[in-house]
Image (tube, one colour):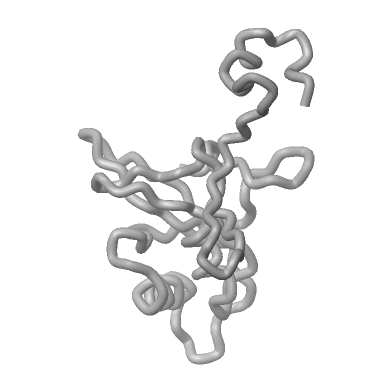
Length: 140
């Protein structure tokens, strides 16, 4: 990475000597496995906790009736932010449960209480860039 084209201010923010700092968050476990947690600027701070939306999305991605899921902060006012899951449904689950119920049940099973979405919104599509990346800031 040589730097951003004609954006010297941004270069100063991301370059550390010869190193390009990406703001990606990852961890390496004792067995040498690398786990990607998302980007610093995507991390949700809710109720004083820092939460990776990628981790929450991974836990919810294979819920029956869910085609796609994106997780982002939802500002509810007075400085309070909640974790919210935006869900694109497939067909209704066979047992009659709503997609919202299924998502919340899976969250209860798979996630620590502070990481669980407090709100689930069903949408027709997720906002995306021309490259297909979900634009989390456009949710809400």
